[in-house]
Length: 68
Image 1 (cartoon, rainbow, N blue to C red):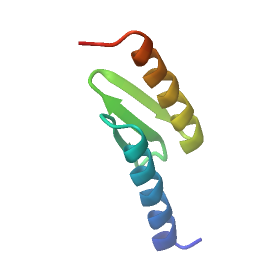
Image 2 (spheres, rainbow, N blue to C red):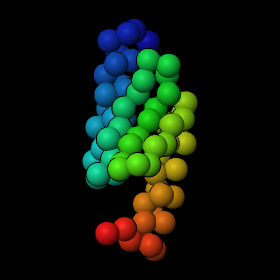
Image 3 (cartoon, helix red, strand yellow):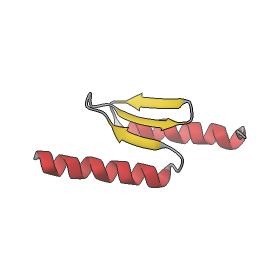
Image 4 (cartoon, rainbow, N blue to C red):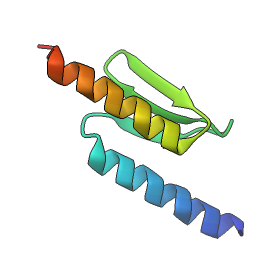
């Protein structure tokens, strides 16, 4: 996969995650880690699927215990 194609693919992931998880800032760092930040919460992982799972868990906790 070429560099441009890889960038498009990663851009698709960022767009999809941002749409799915409103309120989170999502990106991929130069170290290859995917990250998401909301307030003082930070999630960081090498795998985009793991990031999605962890964000769902955090959003589930927020639904049970809403924050101001």
